Amino acid sequence: MTEAYVREPDPPNLSVGTRESYAFSVEATIGQRNMRYLIGRRFGGHTAVTVLLVSHPATLAGTHVWITEDAAAGSCRVVTYVPTMKTPIQLVERHVLGCLPLTDIGYLDLMAWRYPGLGPGREGAPADISWSRWDGASARSYPGPSCTPGLTVTEATDRSTRMVVARAVERLGTPVRRWEVLELGDPDTGRLPRRIRVSRPQTGHWTELRRTTEPVDVPAAAFETGPDELGETIEAALDGRAA
Image (cartoon, rainbow, N blue to C red):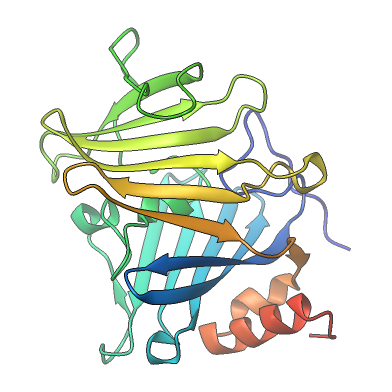
């Protein structure tokens, strides 16, 4: 049995209590397209691997994002793939602060910890989160890396759960993208969000993502396989079959 990962001082984003390796399913409607995603997460020491796999529609099946974080080393590697690519690509930093292909879901929104390329939070600087339902949360703004001049990321942390519940990306004071938790889950799942909304204020476009399953345990070794094999393992776990 593996030792439970310790979450201190604040719970990592999209964590499930002290579980080390788990997965769940998320659905959304983007345009006229119904989407289904599998999201898997594995913790190990000061590292985290987060994987998003597209399982529906069939034309986008195989699309995936693979994020590897090392909190101690201050590193974060993001690899993405869509079926039109010859091979997966590792994103350069200026794209890490962008969105997944064909969505408004930010790579930042999938990471376990705050992206290490962001600058230190500005003590006492204004951090407006009044656009969200979490305007009573504790908010702080972080400047983007040098390759993204004028970019700022603001995060709001709920005072009772210590979870990040809202995030805004701005460039030169203009909102580019927003993310917020609409509904938290039960205490026994570490309050893993049930519903999340992502939006682009300049266009008025928004998408609601709904968690459609409870988180299930997944063997940590499954994250050493490729995305196809990992997807099969997750589906089997969600179906209650032996992986």
